[in-house]
Length: 259
Image (cartoon, rainbow, N blue to C red; front, side, top):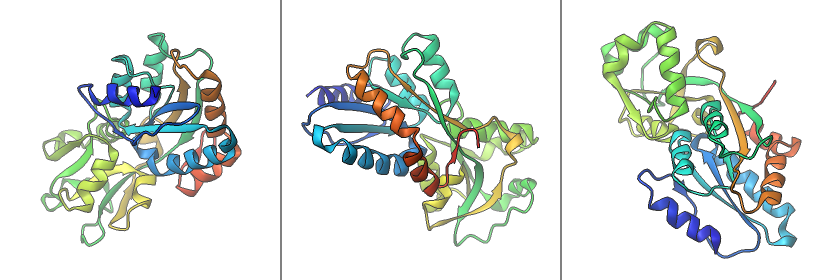
């Protein structure tokens, strides 16, 4: 099947995202999705397939950092839909002529927080408390490829703390790896999206960044120009931006775009 060939191509690329096992099916699309949307999008995929079950529709997803997924698309991985955690990658795809014109939709927003392990006695009453030696290493997404890392660095720069902290920063492949570092106590603190903090019982939020400390966190969806299933891709993007999907996203702590 086409999707099986596509995922074989993806795994041969230099940087890989987390994907799904593929089986044969009817009409299919491959959706590249920012890692922070993993749990919500699995529910949305199931709901969408239930609604279209009579036609044998299958949605396959590959999760990873938005920067990694963007590079895979540029290198030839034929995703049908891309849902990013930042405008930056979608802007670039549009400029490069790889996105189908007029299919972009801004869907969601999110917040940025500092987390520690639930058993940690660390308290961050002021952001400056991060500079204490007892905090140890601080995990963030790789700022050059992971939107959560870009937002984290931007916030620390804007709040005047990047220079004091950058030597203790541990960059991670995506925001879910940051979460794992803190869960396993490999880092004393981590900077993740608000929604990531809610899915783990092993971490707690100790600080919320002011919204004006970083660029607004926006999740846009866009259809790829070379999609071979344009009709199904459009139907899926419409569903992702629907009121029904919005309820699922909100149950995971996301906020609708424009709210």
